[in-house]
Image (cartoon, rainbow, N blue to C red; front, side, top):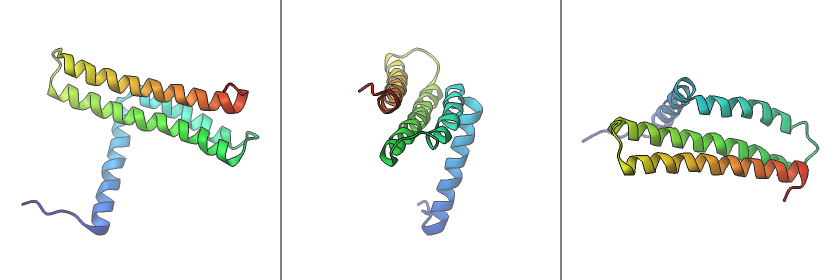
Length: 121
């Protein structure tokens, strides 16, 4: 039977694993790096725009959501690749679903920013 961590130890270890995951994404995922650069430009820029606090939160949230979905997609891809590189319909479908999720989150990002900045909605 495995001993479960509790309290501060569990929180500390979870934070450490999260940190390792971020470092791994930075090292191995070009898409994550590109989206992170965009986030590092856009998030500070939003604080110089003449928008309401709610609009600012929505704009930052849309950017952060893309990063979150990219991390999840990278996890799916890593798990599928761990199983093997030979073609399997379900493996391909899983990777395509992850990619589609990133695409949809980027569309949301563009819609939120476009609606707020240019009144696109």
